[in-house]
Length: 464
Image (cartoon, rainbow, N blue to C red; front, side, top):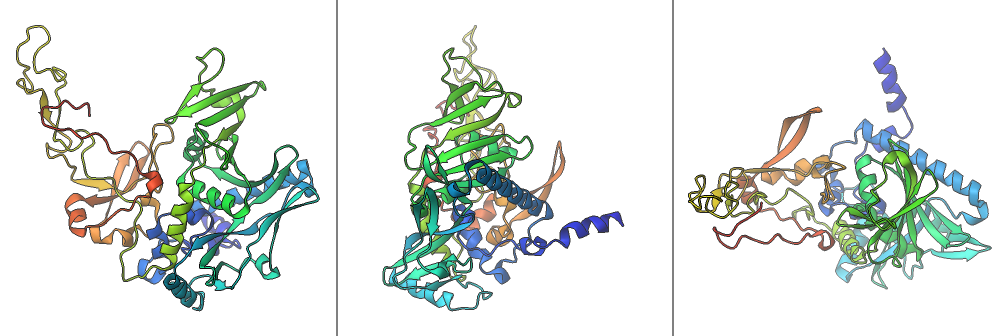
């Protein structure tokens, strides 16, 4: 009885049924930085059979909505209605399209909204997008046409200009008395995402969304980020004027400030003593982060939007994320590692005789890969640890709603592994099956990491 009553509180709510839907696959808003394959498959639900959104995820969205409304009300109370612009205003940024792409998008716009592959939008020749205009000290999103105020407008195709205008909603605009007009985005985030944002490593999805907002409005944007479990709040500035290293300013509970520069995910203090450590969470509540702007992301988003809206289901999806390469991290594919006994010298330190374990060869077969240089299987990227992960997968495929369809050719297998928190699912792909499927991962250029230096020959020492 109690359980059924508890379920009624959530399942009978107004937005529950709507939010259970995994998504339409429209490349707008926060979805701009998601994997193109995910959005392509979501646009054809009969083909991909996506998993519905979990109840816990819906609760997290509702909490984020509450935080956004509270922050908007607080901004209006502090700065006044005259300095706070439209909440959830509709803005547009453009993507160039070829005549062939424009023709296909036009056909899909004419389809019924619930038809697979239909594009949400309309064709308007000579379209003039809404622009930011300051009037009486207030930053406004001024629409060109009254119809553009409607939330149902969607994408706008201007075939004459060869442009596809992509809609994006902003939380609100704020005209600061000293800094001028800005676009504010509000979000309540997890422990992992907050820590990475504090160190200047914004998620790719958030950077893509903010870059589109800056391009659509012509205003600098900042992200007010609130940690869910501790209520810490930071303001992250992301605009073309921010260049160089990541700068973090922490306001301690004693009202004293500490400034850090972040390099490689590690804070470097700039206080006079030069040895100050990153303050513990108990000693501060508010912070400010200046994150360098990456203009390459916007070009990647433009390609992703067109690629998603023009995708043909008879073609393989454009996977941007997936399992890590099957090369062994221990030996970097060499199959051998440096001998720990002699530390790569091949002889004992005192007697100078040949080392016993390696017989003077300086190297030993790599145990994790069986001296093959490659591991037998990989798991799809999970949500990494919030404290130990410096470089993290930007798109945890294990949480994707269409992962089974996306990696079906590679024989994706679900297993349960035991951790200190109990059993947890893991999605595993074998090396042989991956090779036979010949799937390709198109990592976005701005997310590509430099390749590790290879081991030139078998006698070259390796520290991995």
